[in-house]
Image 1 (cartoon, rainbow, N blue to C red):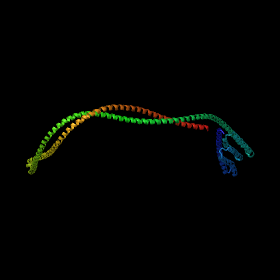
Image 2 (cartoon, rainbow, N blue to C red):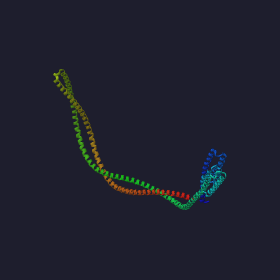
Image 3 (cartoon, rainbow, N blue to C red):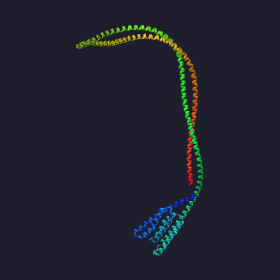
Image 4 (cartoon, one colour):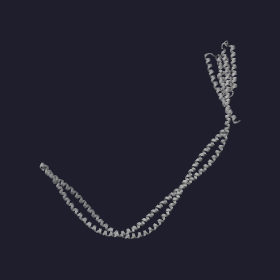
Length: 501
């Protein structure tokens, strides 16, 4: 069984389910309304209970059977026959046993339900049976009802209404069927077109899938190659960084060596100059030492004189202290005398005012004398202490002069030895200067070579980094393209699977 046949069968089954569902719902609604209406008739006493039971059996019995059939199989085709036969029988029963002519309208709502089947033959048959039942009902009324002639117009309306209902239901079904057929033809034509398009899409999707698979394989290979290139360039860049750092370190060390050599050369030249200067200074030092020896001898004699004068100064300071002590006593007594004079002047009153002024002036003079005496005493004490300290210093200087004279004699001998050593150092410094000059020239050439190597290494490192970045970018682009190719392959495969359904 082909796929189109299966699809057509599934479509018919789904259509039958919708039809059965609509018929069951419509039939149930109509039955519910009629059942409630006749229960109301029973309550009002217009109908007997046996009649209601027969009516309910004809109304609800087939409906329950239809529900059971629909519950077991929603695609049941016999629901059509059951609904038509059962409701037609019910309609004939009501129409022939009804107490009013208006019962003929019960066919109208069910006719709409029957239209769900979209079957012109079925509607035509139902219309003919319904019309026949109505003719029978009218003929029966003509035989049994004495007022038939008075209601003849009503019966004519009944026949006309049923006839028109059947005709228009049939016409509606035919129009609906034609429209449905036209739409079905268009749908079939569109499906044929879609089938051709789908077939072409399937072919294209298969070709695209094949191409995308090849592209994906090539992208995978290119991605692996890009990753290996990136890894290699990363190692190269890392090595170049290490080499650059080592060259940089070597350049720094060489520069430091160059600076050290330059500094050493300058120091050597300075030493040579200093040696020459030192030699001259040593000669001057020897002359100065002789002069210093003579000066030391003179200082020793003068120190003895200063020591004698300091002893004399100390004895004079002691005499001055005694004199100051006497003056201090006099100032104290004068002050006491002035105090007594002030007391006596106070006792004398106005007569002693002049004497009080003199006493006051004497008191001030005594105070000034005492202050001056104290200052002089302090100065004499300080002078005495300084004289004693100077005397000690002079003694110390005398001892130092003796030691200095001994050191001067030894220093003179050392200057002679230093002079000989400086001459030897001068010769060595001259030789070292020549070596340092040659070393400076050689190291300058090394520094220039290291600068050149460093520049070349930096250029290589920059090129390697650019190549590494390009490799990384290529790898990212390849990764993106690979992802796009895989997604395209997945979409193509899904489309191919959908087309083959």
